[in-house]
Image (cartoon, rainbow, N blue to C red; front, side, top):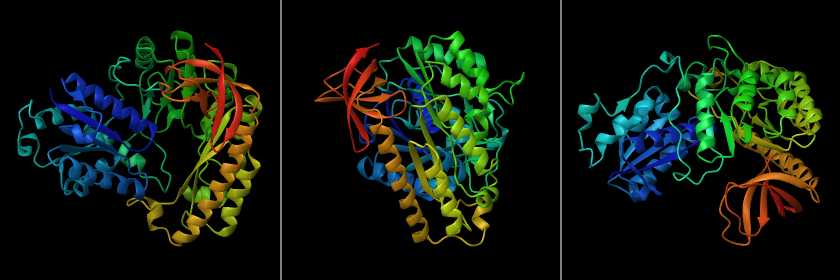
Length: 445
């Protein structure tokens, strides 16, 4: 039986894509290898949101080719869609398949294996690149779900939306993911039911612009309507919402998340900048005061919720004053964690041609300041739970003194003792060390 290995880079949507790719390969009779070194076909599912993401993908290609020179390396994902020729020329790469054809990836992979009979690439395509117009895709389809025996993951990503109709001046993603398109509600419910039947107890809803779910469906629908349908028509124990833009954290969504014990108390709300001037240059659709209002409403509705944000430093033209406005806004809001990124110029985006590019050392210094601020806020949040109980799910089988778990409000928790994975429980918090809570089991759900 031919073997494969899939390595994913980047966001939750990419991870969900990777799971769908694995489903395809298993359906073709291939067997999963735990390591790239042991696989006949290695699929690298790439990200291209920053230059460092591109570097990570190229480094992985070189590493796989060095450790397993006989492997057929198949590169897909966002980098493959953006710069296929750049990837196809790297040593060891057999095939590049863009996002436009990712749904057919297994059809291209199977002939590369010995059991499928190796077919010269010239017979598969005119060259070792298969990329088409991503904007031609107008629908999003789902793939069958896995059984629990297939993987040890306890919190699968269910991608219910892809693409983006926004045109933020720094972002390449709309050009490699295409138009916003949503998984039809019947398919969403069927996928959730399948995951529940397979034993999963927490499902992460993901998308490129998740809060826009349903806007282009006929009849038109909303993200809140999808959440309500999942709660009413499925038996899933816990839904976790991944990143949602601030304008899509409507009062309706906030009230729904706050009132349902089956939705994790967790809001990830991209900020990017606290400077009104920079937000306008970024073509973001909100102002700092709009953003602050949404975050404060979330905190009032959910006092113990995790609240996180993506923040970018070093955007072209960002002055010391602009940065200070960002730092001050973050200081004033009840964040519990931040994902801080240094601006990375992406070819083809409007910001790449903007003057006043910020020196790298200046941007890195600003990055460090925000990371230190985020670490302090996270520590304060974690310490507030010492002596209390938090709902959590175990992520792994405990094999030592502790078992790793994740709390409902997105904190890493180490529980004393060896526990089975995928257990919902109440953990009693004893201490907070570095970025981890330490506790014991108070009750098992």
